[in-house]
Length: 152
Image (cartoon, rainbow, N blue to C red; front, side, top):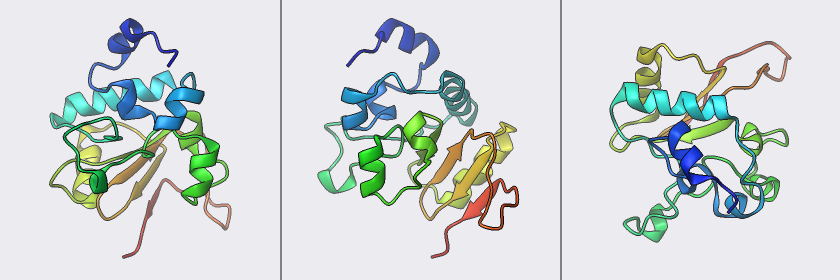
């Protein structure tokens, strides 16, 4: 791990590197992160006032079946295994999937909206929300979109 922990703590007081990076990305591409996006997630956490879960794979308090490893920065290989988009913002440190214990995806989405923070991409899923800072988000008809939902 090639992360300056003193610097990291200044820019990310709410999240440890293990909460942002997958195990593989922490070893192989720990330099890949959008600092502005990381700061925005930390400001979001401060504004919401509740713990945000991105990755919890390093926690000894989490059961194996409840582990989350690839909701933050991930390698291209992990992204492919997960069926992620070939140009996934997760692989460049510009996207996180966030969970808040006890809340549904739509409840998390509403909290994010209440903070007035702008995220260029917002995806609402059953138990989490995808946030990203891509420059352009388009659908299959090549029309700009900022929000999508997963049907269940």
